[in-house]
Length: 303
Image (tube, rainbow, N blue to C red; front, top):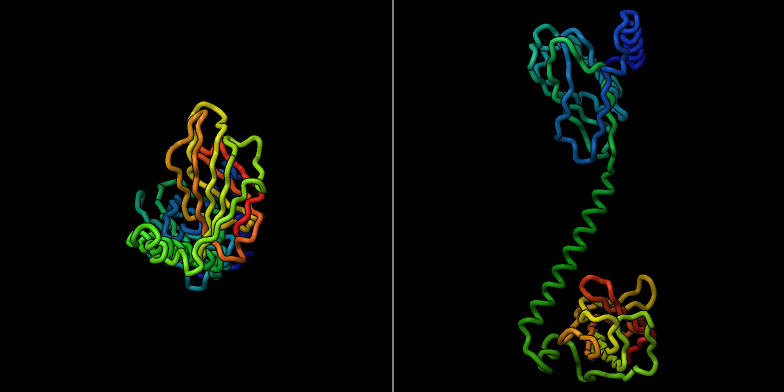
């Protein structure tokens, strides 16, 4: 079942020359190009074959030895498989409308590991040349994706466990003790209003800023006023960034009510932080639901 590439090349030249001599269409009219995606191993690609006419598959990857499986092998008068080629010639036993499945496997470990084709018998027309290209994906890329998925799942599980534990904990000071939010050193606070700076393009301006530190946590209490625009503003998210790639993990953003034009309001931000990771200064950015209006405060420090 193995043909050399030179025999296949000679056959292609002969078929092209025969078509030209008969004044018929060139080889291009009977050619197909099939591209395989990484997840296409089980997907059937339809190819037209015809009794007495050759259909040649050209693969851009080497085929595995004995890796070709053809249904209805008795309906084919010729089946030649080479290193990167496969030639099929249906016999007169193949009736118009019949369908046969042929599968191949590739030698390397990249995905897709193989391909399947549905051979549809036509009385007088065939796909003479079928070029098959693989958009390969390596096993290593799948392993990396699996590792990232496991890490994300673990992070979500830890977050769920933390939320459940906090939900079941009592409120107030007892709740902070229950979840390990404070120890015997209590909560340390600092007024940082005079040391922070605000972006003049911000939607609101701070007029009082307090920072706090407890066990494994930091928090900010920001009082805002001078709303730009008439539509009320409410913080939906926050980022505490010391430099690119060193953001603190914000646990929650709380605001009692939206800040209206001419009014004032307070926003409380809590983040997860160790003493080392929270050495400032930090830049605080707050945003509303659609992200159109933001508040940026620089030079934020913690006790």
